[in-house]
Length: 211
Image (cartoon, rainbow, N blue to C red; front, top):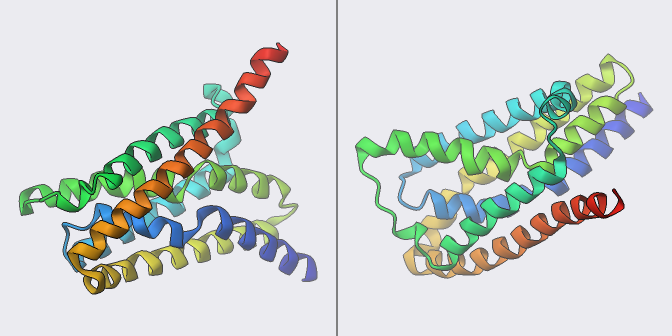
């Protein structure tokens, strides 16, 4: 029992620090600024559910998929960095908050942003994917694997709660406050994007040089 608790706490700390639900919130707020509360909740629910499914799939079969397609986590980090940078630039210009979405376009918009970039790579990013694969392989028996699934579910639940609560924050700070926060967080997201990109690029360049 003690081993299970230690394994669960270690997995929880690792996933929480990597997924960072509070860090996802500004991007979610900016991308859903044109949606009402009900639509935001729908986006949060769908993105969280998809991220949970993706993490489980990668945990159980991620290494096989990566090997089959010759994909590396470092490549995923670079792609994630590019996506984040583009998102951060749009946020820095405060463009996302001015997007107007008609009722006819709303369902399509929700579908698009729920999958990318919210589910992947914001929630289920390179770090979370790597974590899920490593912890699944480290799980020695069925109880530990069950604990890992429970930890992933708990982290995604916390993320969902944070995203649903983001709508109230948006209503509180108003349009001007949202634009200020949007530009500030855009700068932060761009910095994170650069870190992501070079964290993936460095190992690739080292492997090229050594070979």
